[in-house]
Every structure is written in C-alpha cells, then in structure tokens.
Image (cartoon, rainbow over all chains, first blue to last red; front, side):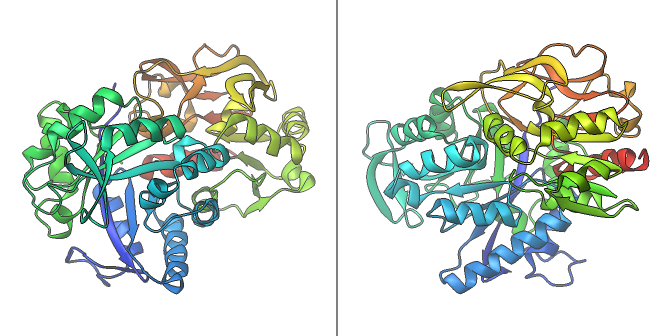
Length: 256
Length: 201
C-alpha cells in the first residue's frame, strides 16, 4: 500500500485546439482537447495538464470553455497552465473546473502572487512550474524563461525554496537542457531538487525511452509528465505503467 | 433530488456531473430549505479548513447538517467536506485553529509524512466493511490534502489509507458517507462509489 507514481500527459492548447496531438486511430477530431483528454483518461492517465499557449485574450476565453467541457467529461484531476498572472485568472480557471493551476513567468516577475493564490485557494492548487537549465548560478541550475532562451540569473534551488515558503504545493520541474531531446529526464537536477523539497516534484522534459520513467522515480520524482512520447505515439500510458509495475514501482492500475 | 451544497468552495463542476450519472435530479444550491429537503446532500470542500468553515457557516451549513441527520437524511462529505464533520482542525486559519461542526469528536491533524501535500492515487484498507465501496474495495482513489483524521472514529466504520502513517480515508455511519479523497476525480472507481451511494438513497 503506497502512493502511486502519477503519469501525467501534457497537452499544448492554442485557441481551444490541441497543437501537438497524437493520431489515435479512434479519434474523431484530433484537435479537440476534450476528446483527447477522454482518451488519455480511459488509457489510465492519473492526471492531465493543459498548457495554454494562446497569445490572445480572445483565445483564452476559449480555453475556459475547454476546461469546462473537460471537467464535465473527464473524472481525473486537471491542471491548467500558461499565461496565468493574477488571482482573478486562477479564480476563473478553478470555477471553470480546473483542480490546479501552474504558474511560471508571472511568479518570477511577482513572487508574492504565490502567496496571494495560496492564501485564497490553498497551496494544493499551486503548481510552481520552473524551466531550469545548467548555468552559472551556485547550484549549477539556473531559472530561464521563454522556453529556455532567456536566462534570469536566478538560482533554481533558491527559487524553489522561496516558492515553497511562499505557498507552492507542487513543483513542475522542466529541464530545458533535456526538453524535446527524448534522451531522458535530468536525473541530477531531480536529485538536487528532491534534497531541498518537501513538496511533490513532477519531473518533466526529456522522456523518450521506457527506462527513463523508473530512473526519474529513483531520483526522487513523485510524478512524471511527458508530452512528445505520448503525442508521437512512441509509448502508450499503459505500456509505461506495465513496465514500472513489473520493476516494482507503485502505479495505479485501472481495474474496473 | 440530490443537492450539492454551494458555499463558495471551489470546483464543483465534476462533482455535479458525477452525481448526475444516476437517476436523480442534481441541483447546486445554497438554499437551506432545498438542501434540507433533498434526498441526498453532497458537501464538497477544497482549500483551507477555516475558509470552508466560514463559508459553511455563511449558509447555516452546521444547522443544516444537524437537522438532516435528525430527520434521517443522508449526507456525502468530500475532502474538507469530510473534515468539517469533526470537532476541530489543527490547520491554522488567520493564526488560529478552527472548530468544525463536531458530528464526530475526533480532531483533524497534520499528516505525518516527509512530502506534503499527499497528492495522488492511494489504496484503501477495510473498504469491504462498507456497502458503498462494493465493487471498488481494491481500487485506488485520488487524494490531495495535508491534514486528515489520524485517530479511529468511534461509532463509525473507518476505512484507512496510509501515507507516512495510517489515516482515515473514509468514514461511514447509517446516514453519513464521507471521504478524504475526491471520488469525482477518481476515475471509474470514484464514479462507481458515487453510483453506489446514489442508489442507496
């Protein structure tokens, strides 16, 4: 009896449509986030993450509608991130049916946003998303923005400690060195963050081979997020869970 | 009719849809009368215990719970909606510990585990004691919390889970079913549990 390691597919959504999507054979509309969420749910996803990459405020209204429809059809936790910069944004998303929100750049610009959200809704709704890569800061890992293109000079471990103190409930740790490479999660970074974090860590960036998932758990991850391995159909969620289970890791099996 | 009590406690969209899967009409309401008369009352709850209690008292939820129990009408509490049935929580709110409705005398305490909140899918022990869990005794359910009931609840069936130490995952009496986990976020297992409860009304 142990807590299962969560497997979390991430969908990039723009103007209410999935941008990078897997071509499931039984999918009617490959661009519909709700339909894709249903399929991932049925395949055993333990949680879903929508990353809203919409630029316009018009498009963001569409996202709320997508969240609403998903929450009505898919009975697993839903995290929404991308472009959230105020308590009002969070309120809107939670009312629409999101269970958690992830914040990234807005928290770097205005760290007290973490306190404000936590005081209003509880720390369990805040996933602090951090895009880190190897850099010259003291831990060797530096916070970046704009998909890793802009370095901030902020040390990743310092920022994580501060965000936990301010009320973050989970860390979504994105490795900008490994992102998109499918060469494996950044295990060294996971281990370093585990040493200083008493809140759950969701590892992200680099998953490509089935062996990568177990290694990230051994390095201290509580949950594993992946995008391209699922989108490109390299592995199905069931494949990963069966493999982890065979290796003795605790995963959720959908029995009914 | 099933009433979902609306007292400003966050996301209830999934709960509404989940309870609609039976043959009952489901209303989301903050009306005392409507919530009192409903065949079943669902008390959701997300966030801080103190904030939930304050919202609950705002709709006279404490009286509502006592009156329903006195009238023999069923209640389903979810997450903090379960915790508020207890006497007090150690979770500080504006610097103070807050009293609950006190249907059960035990207190809500901080979980004892190296990583908190407890977020994710966990299994249960002793679920076979409850008919509401029929068919899902061995399933995992979705939890998200840092506080919980660590002591045995007297005069009630207790179903346990373990995270760092043992805690009460669900508590049940003739009229009360309450879960620390979120059945409306627990996939097919959670939907089955809800369906079992709805069918018992």
